[in-house]
Amino acid sequence: MTAPAPARRRGPRPAPAAGPALLVIAHGSRDPRHAATVHALTRTVAALRPGLRVETAYLDFNAPSVPHALAALYASGVREVVALPLLLTRAFHAKADIPAALAEATSRLPGLDVRVADVLGPSPLLTAALERRLREAGLTPADRATTGVVLASAGSTDPEAIAVIAEIAREWRLTGWCAVRPAFASASLPRTEDAVRALRAEGVHRVAVAPYVLAPGRLPDRIAAGAEAAGADVLADVLGPAPEVARLLLSRYDAARTARLAPRALTA
Image (cartoon, rainbow, N blue to C red; front, side, top):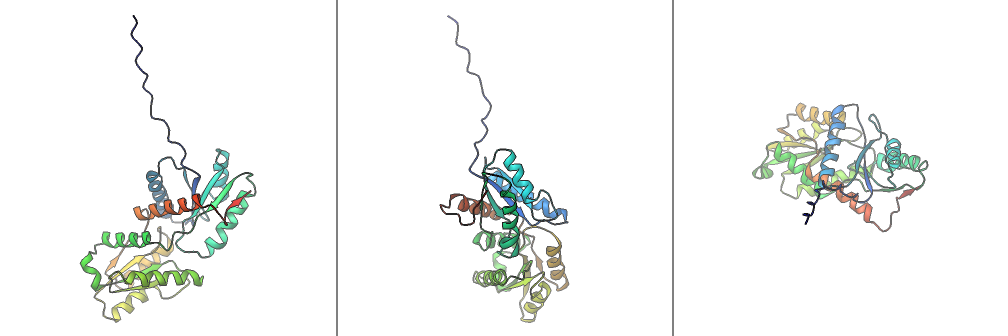
């Protein structure tokens, strides 16, 4: 009797697609560190959610643009996309630029359904990422009561965005820091250096600057220069691919994907 042939070993099956594709829409910058940091973040997101297709697009300076990224997804057979603004506040880019870019793209791609996720902030996960960066810069829990923090954001002319930053600073102060003050690299006041000096004038023992920005670039460099000019004791890194930020992207994606009603959905 002939022995049965041994079972053939098969390689691992490819992971099934985990829902709509995720298109992360970043601002873009001439600074190559910006795109490198965005891609590091999206790689972290993809590693946390195997099977999820994660792509990146930019509003300016970098490629691909939003229309080009959506066209590439469409050409590969994708018909459902969650577009996620890589923004910390709902300012002009979130309210005008991104909707306009998505509307232009979907008008040329029949049958493509695009749901727009919320911007990232505010979120406790972002506060946790700020705390992580301050720890990495050398602060310990014992330093909280004697350390004032400057929450330094890019800045905006949008009053709603400015109010959000101020509220984040107020709430963060309640976690035990000696003081938390908002500052802005552009469009609004105070500047980072002014906030550092104001805390010094109030007798704060140690001053740390926590950039509330996602990736390096011109405005984060301005924050760093202000911190140095005013003699800040600690300068944390940008949020970048912090695990908390990656988890927040997935949380925003899931909320947009599972929403029964999508008032901001764009369908050609």
